Image 1 (cartoon, rainbow, N blue to C red):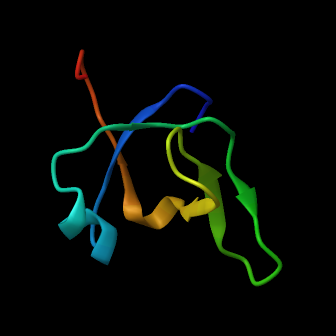
Image 2 (image 1 turned 180 degrees about the horizontal axis):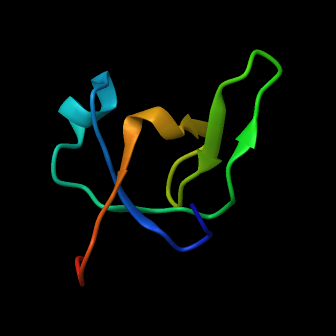
Length: 61
């Protein structure tokens, strides 16, 4: 996942709160000490698990 990738949240609480929101990554993924991979999203603070993100294909705003 590269910087600028468009993603949607899936299979988590936040996906239910923001079902149609498309996010844009603002960092490349990095691994936390317990092995979870996270990425920064524009408009959201803190890292977000890459297992709960699905890349959006095409020209979506």
